[in-house]
Length: 296
Image (cartoon, rainbow, N blue to C red; front, side, top):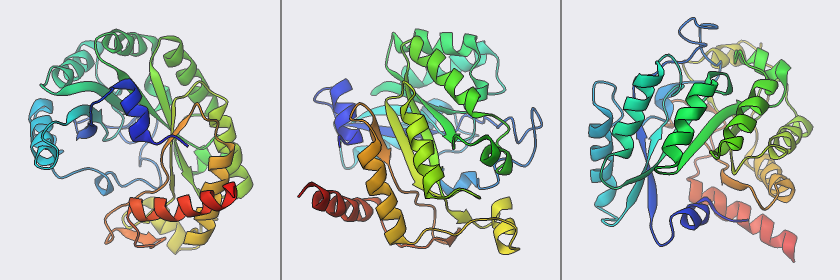
């Protein structure tokens, strides 16, 4: 299993590369009324946005502050500008998008872009813009799929379909853009069999990376209220159950696809369940022990 850092090293040989998160003030189409309101039932955006990502700051200032944070430990680091918060291809005309993205890639030390978005906000002109930028510096798309089940997508208020995911990935890949998919394990109504099917369906597409994490029930989300009131059909994973599931996922994901991560780590005071108290490296040590046993 190749690591994500090894994957990046193949693209940027001999260079240590770090993502710097950028909040450019985007919204989401299922929040702002474009296709719905309320957002995804599980989502609390401040659970994963670094403190330096404040929309009153320019893109370049956020990148400079992020660089200052990481440079204390790795002064020779290069960076990927990571448009992370909300849907980063939504609600702006093509000229405004290009201005934001170019502001990022023109910053000293930035060697590429990572664009987090939804599959239904990637029209052909946006794909074309990303393809043009990709000829200047590598562009990576992180597309939120979450599941391949249209019924689950409806339950969690996503307002897009698995067909949308397949269409977006194929069009981006055909234009030379590296694509990754994001999946969540343990969504309402989904058992182990469905989760493994989601992974298999994702791997059938021309993607480079897969980002997976356990469902976290976070305070202040619609899903928390549904779970607290017994309205959500789900049981949070135990650590042992999730490790076993991830080991099975490693077995079925082809070598051409890099698994970027397995674990979500929201601030502990936001998390209701599951509460494992593990850092990512601790989880990976446990998972690698299981995988090593499989190889004996």
